Image (cartoon, rainbow, N blue to C red; front, side, top):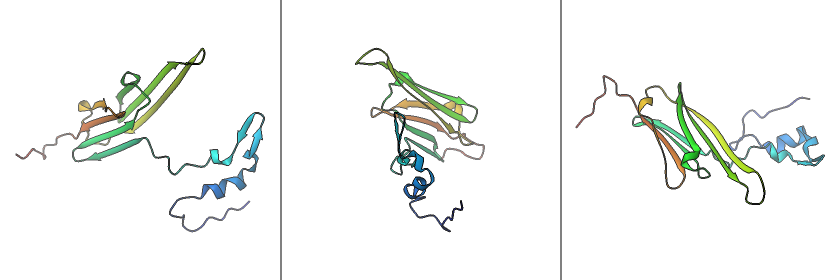
Length: 145
């Protein structure tokens, strides 16, 4: 089967809703007790990342949406050139035996020139984990007063 791609992609990206269904028609309908749809494989363009990473002259900042976690459910650590964020929350089910577990792991590369020894993290009242670290002071830079 030959695929002909347009010379340039549309501004909105690849039109997955047109590309995937003909390629995987078997996913329409049911398979045993499971219902499948090609929509399960189509990226959601409105699903924005739950994290924002910034690095400028003032420092390095990561903001992660952790509304579903308590501060004691979170762990932030530096491993090599990465800051790793882990969250794990368990709660007893209200309607029967067992537990519901929610967890995530994220890694963000720390740019060169960031003072990892001064890295700090805190959770804001609206559930945003803010990780920040200043840039290293170099011999050529100094504070002007």
